Length: 95
Image (cartoon, rainbow, N blue to C red; front, side, top):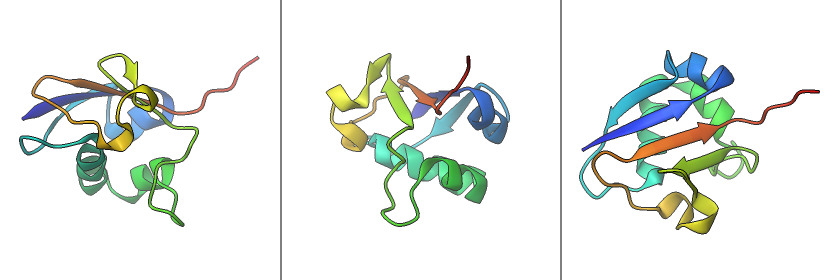
């Protein structure tokens, strides 16, 4: 199934654009999608998303599925369906 992945700032640069489409097996979770992204885009993306000591995403990275923060869903175990949109938000600073 195809999932749209949107990213901004340095994450968009690593993905080669603000939006990419990723093919994952039917019944995949967000965790599987993140693994697929890392497999496809390599260590630079892993280093931005995943803590090396725990294998879990950094707390400051926000994942949204169809506009909803995964904190209010099932976290990385949130199931995905064909056509979902996942937004990955890195930390942003400004002033």
